[in-house]
Image (tube, rainbow, N blue to C red; front, side):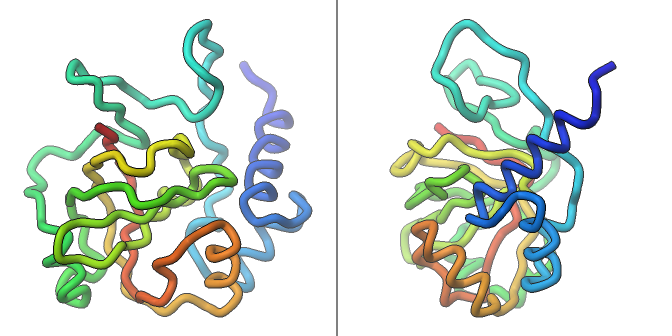
Amino acid sequence: MRPLVPSLVALSLAIGACSGEEPQFAARHEAQAEGEAACEDPTPPPVAEAEDEGPPGPRPIRTADDGSRVFGHELTDGIEPVALSAISADPAAFGDRVVRTEGTIERVCQRMGCWMELRAENAEPVRVPMAGHSYFLPRDVAGRPATIEGRVHVAELSEGRRRHLEAEGAMATASTLSIEATTVVVR
């Protein structure tokens, strides 16, 4: 059985690194000031066992035969893809629904890989946070095609949250649309 203390310390440090704050205060500040679900889940991300090959960083849960890497959970059976342009054209029609969509990764959080922006033809980039910081993307996947699955959210960002994301390099902060990704498949 693994001790809990190192996992909690690692989670605290991870949240602090993403928010740029002292680790012990980051989760509480995020939850209180921003009201975002991303920092309300205290469950630490699964710790990957050490591997002898490959660079350090986020590990996919699976690498497919075609070389694509799956992060988060496996894709859910029975969810038909929806064009990102359709979601961005009428976000309210998709609000609080789980969708699968595709696009090109425009940018990734350079601190931890805890969010990305996804772009598709005829659509502005959409903010895609990784479900409650439960997994992270490699920081070098910008420009790669991706399929995501997650819940659509339509809500204004608080001023503090907007500034936080912009400090990490985000550009799609004016939009009320975001998709909380439970799965990201990077090709």
